[in-house]
Length: 217
Image 1 (cartoon, rainbow, N blue to C red):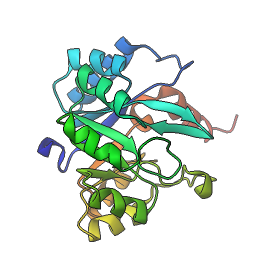
Image 2: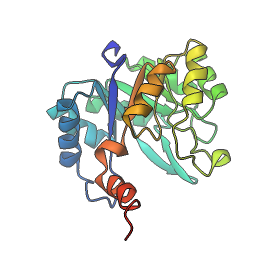
Image 3: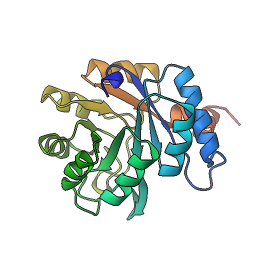
Image 4: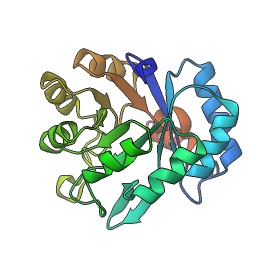
């Protein structure tokens, strides 16, 4: 996983009902990302991971989204994590906010027993420090702005959280609303180990919507 240090991780995902919702399409997006210089990939579901693994050889952070409350939670059980490992994930992302059901921080130990590093997705500094102290190999700012107490979601990425975690010695992966080259540079300047960009690269619907909003029509 040292391959990720200082690199861009591209999140290749598409929800149900999206025109790109097909494992082979996701794999092609992943292949494009690697050709463009991605150091790693973040992929949802065992099916998509298996398809991506057939086309790429960079590190894959696997996750499994489950609908819960007002949002999807990320890999809440050891069983889901095991399925991702079997599909070929090199690391597993898990939701370590209080909103997630399941064993919480104990998931880290379960996944380490599967022989994989853990990316703990959090929304606050306290959650990030708890994840790090519990043994998470990386802490992602993925869920900042998405928990019920943080709504409505801000427009910009949470660079302050990246800096606060890095200042405490946490190996932090910046994720969440990173859309521009400046955002990526700012995250690394704040101390990020790596940066994840998703929809700004792999979702033509959201890209078009954002640009169309600037048109007078």
